[in-house]
Each structure stands twice: as C-alpha cells, then as structure tokens.
Image: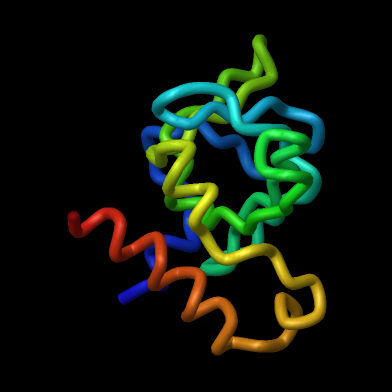
Length: 117
C-alpha cells in the first residue's frame, strides 16, 4: 500500500507541471534544504532534496505523499516530516532510482512506517 505515498495529497496545492527545482523545503521543525529534482509521474511522484551542509550534502528522495503544502509565492515546499526523519531516511541512489521497483518500495516503506507511528 505504499503507492499512495508516491502521489501528491489533494490539499497540498500542487499544480502538475510546476517546476519546483530550487524551492526551499521545510520540515515540521525547520528548513532542510532545496529541491534538486522532482517528478509529477502518476504513482511515482517525488522530490529529490539537497540537504546541503545540514547533513553533509546528502540527497534524499521524498515521495510526493510527504508534501503537506506548496507555497508558490514563497517558493517553499512543506513536508510532514521532521528533520530527524529526513536525516535518517534512505539516501537518494540515482542508479537504483530508475527501473528498480525494490528501491522505491524500500523508500516508500520508510515513509509509510513514519506515518503509522
């Protein structure tokens, strides 16, 4: 049931086709970085976030279902995760990301498990 995590929540304000690259990403407890890549693909929407120096330049893959809201004016994406949840998340693996459904299941499960807590 991790598929729903890969789609934007209706209340997020996401407008398909909007270029989110460069938007700041805000966790529930503060800023965590900027959007480096994103996808609006059906059942496979995501953000790749560059956390910068905050956690030593780590890139993380955030499923679109973690997005709570998007502020087009302020160019910010708000996610339903804490900094620690993002820090502990699986690192983005560009090689496994394309074509490896097991990788998406692993990442999706991490975030789905956070929602169940």
